[in-house]
Image 1 (cartoon, rainbow, N blue to C red):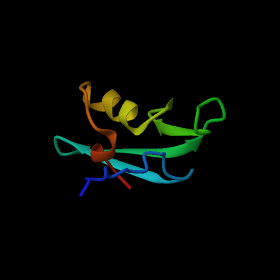
Image 2: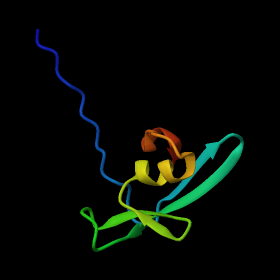
Image 3: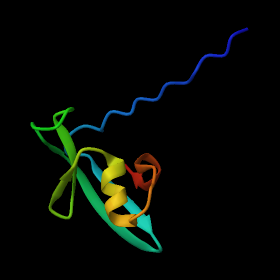
Length: 74
């Protein structure tokens, strides 16, 4: 029997979705916002900047390589 790969939907959540991340006991908040210039038409708004992915926004906070889907909670 052949194994099938599990595929995850890695598209950004809908516009208006609130995100919360925690690092060393401090909470960070972001939101999915409309971004017509980005591939999906939406991006992650954090600190007044618009990021194309949840990972890019999380990397801005952690200053390290991080999985944005694990860092942010919906």
